[in-house]
Image (spheres, rainbow, N blue to C red):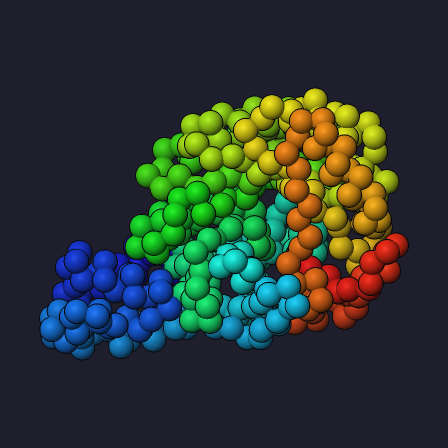
Length: 354
């Protein structure tokens, strides 16, 4: 379901724009569609035709998505395995400090070699209402003041639905524009469409390396845009909207953590209006990648920081609850059965998560 279908169904039962607005706000808060306010009961506001027609529409929305399982982590995050109406599953993550990571696709077509989601390929797109339903479900559990489109899927490959959801969340969903974060591997359509929106989200750009050849190996079906050009496009958007871009760099030991890469990253990102998030990879048994040691991660952060690049270490939320990067869904679907991480120097063994 897309958002306009929901609104058309409401209009068909006699709802005017003011009624639709209130129903939108109630649903996106995780409340019943006919929820009243502190000052006005629903029966004093909605016409009889709307009150009588809401139950089947509410049932249809309830059927869009349901929480199949919850996985609480020690860091305060809560991983949600969400089952859609057709039985497909996606992952959402309630983050510490009132954030939520949502999915935009079942699977992903980019095929990042270090991501479990990409191993299954793209199964289908999520409608804009299915994307928003993840927020509605999460808000029944606890407050959500920030939504990041960093779950399963490449948002640029489902652009219309994602942008509809962003517009909805940034208006009736009452989420600040800079607290809506659009994550992408870099697609020319993103840099064309985002500046045209009324609700302009923050941007997170998956960079991972300064080398075009290595990036093509790691992100085999990402657009062939050189890292330096991506940074320039991201910089222009960040300057336009007035909040910094986030560059994502998954650290893979012996792959993109060399001194040469760090020097190149410093040259590329120094002075840019953004922050570099370095994300130590969470190894899965039998894969070909490993995360650097904790000491190496901190050394990388210090070096980049000392060379003019604002750098943060972003350990994946919920590393002790065995989920993330599509692995929670993969286990539930029987795609994988073993996902414990390798022991890392100076770090206790944990389970996967991104």
